[in-house]
Image (cartoon, rainbow, N blue to C red; front, side, top):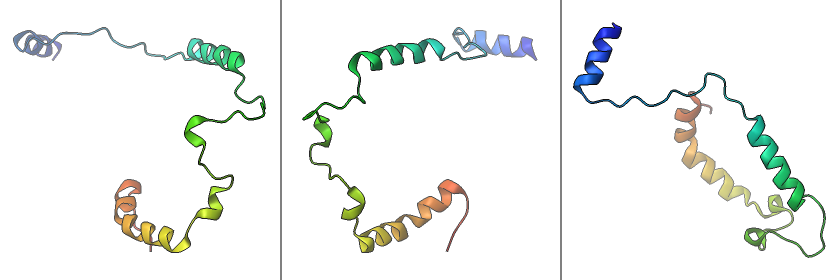
Length: 90
């Protein structure tokens, strides 16, 4: 079987890439993120600081939900949800 696969790869000009590590280690990535977060201190309260993209975001977005529109949206998307989760709920 391996011989057939190697022959197929040769005939079709398949380029073999380096294989990924069997065990993915995220420790180095996590430490880099932690160091960056410690520098910018995003959870430290500073008066007047706000995220540029959230300037118009209400303090309590749940209060702005219109129940009729939410129900209409759910009904319109029920079929999509059915296929995504694999079952139908009525």
